[in-house]
Length: 91
Image (cartoon, rainbow, N blue to C red):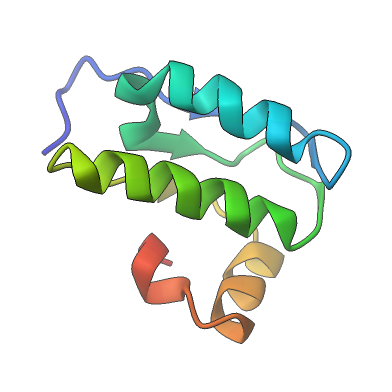
């Protein structure tokens, strides 16, 4: 359950192989904010964004929590569907 004061973790405009690992580490260091992921800035990305989101989801599940993704672009929803992880990510 989300706390009403939970600040969202904002994904950057670009998430590709070049920055995915750094982004994943940054998120894991800020795991309380991972309960709410804001994708409103996300414009240029590939399937590596799914790897990042799944790693965060795994971390939160180990703590009895889960992520909630808001403002997901249609392309992200399609990618998650193609890779069979849409349900896991709540997309």
